[in-house]
Length: 362
Image 1 (cartoon, rainbow, N blue to C red):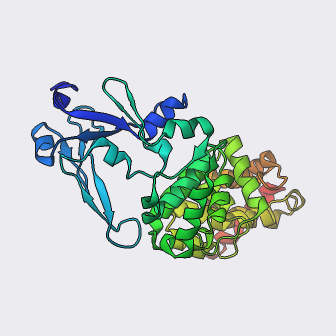
Image 2: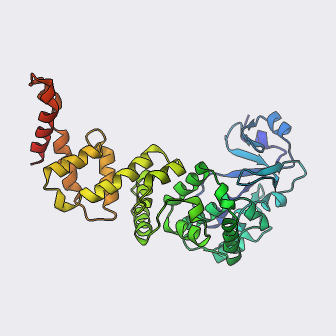
Image 3: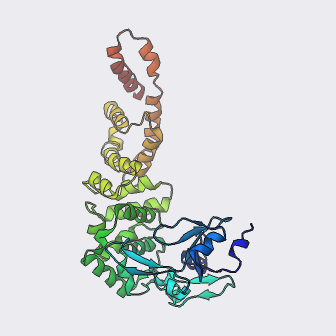
């Protein structure tokens, strides 16, 4: 079967972000497809593989791209999962676009290349404005997070006044409190790796959503500047940026548990304050403090992580990374096995190895 055979006779459109980014002249990413006028049974007969849970989504048998049946939705509960979907063959493309979040994400392009833009998303693109599609925006609290994340990516866009007011109302009535941690973390993670992460938290604050979405988190100018600097340097991975997000947060463990962040993120956030407290230049001449920090951060077994901790710390404090890496190499160069082999009393091995490591630091 060719890539085209499965689509012959189907009415399909590429929709959403792919259309938006193409109009902005951005590199193409993943494409989302909508199929109009079909049924789940027909899609399966054509070789598409169903993968959707709440509504019919299918993988193309050759390209493996996702194709969703055009759908409408109705609010049936609290939170972002509280929806009932309808995907009958009578659902039009315009009806499908009308259920989306922002006008700039509610455009489509057919096989003929013609832009379908019933909500003037292209106009808002030109004006650099985030505007909600309609009142149904407030039925899905994840859209507040998505809006904030888009602000971190498209740094020259502003939020329409009426859209911000809608987000504030969603926060005030507690709708955003019904987001599950996994969904919150998914959006936060994408925002942290965007062009200007501080804008995400600026929009969340303006929307009065921060306390609902990020309990325990402490916002500050220092945190926002550190996140933007990390994005500008673009060398620090996600777990380092999460550590910077927690820079001024006292209850870091509680925040990490609430968001259910990956273990490497929680570890980095826990250890960064230790490095910032002990790794400044004035302590590098103290061999006990130096070795103590390396041991606390498990630098002997995880030297790559220790280096990342140093590179994260240097975002917010002066630090001689090369000197610290030199000291780390010196400590790791001590042959603990040879020391142990030369001692008859096993009880003194640990002390002897540590003394050798301290000596190596001098």
